[in-house]
Length: 131
Image (cartoon, rainbow, N blue to C red):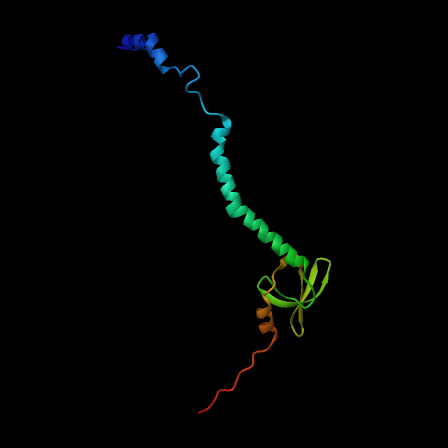
């Protein structure tokens, strides 16, 4: 039985059938064509995830550079008013006698002007009408 298997493997027609095709008809595709799906996936990820995050970081950086005394800001969840800015340190007023110093990079949000005005002005209770 081993003799017949060895004879079959030694047969030249079997060896040609197992060899890769020769000639110009069925060659492998070029390297760029094989790389194209990966480039397309990277482009999709860039435009969906990376680019919007970079824009958001630029906007926050511009907002941090434009800080001025009197601005209402949020720092790590703490609301305060900017008193002064010296180099990279921002002094915030949280209450009448409470001030903290934080790095400028920790200032994340300047609330909209409507929200800032509501935060500054104390809420006045309106008397209810009696019937």
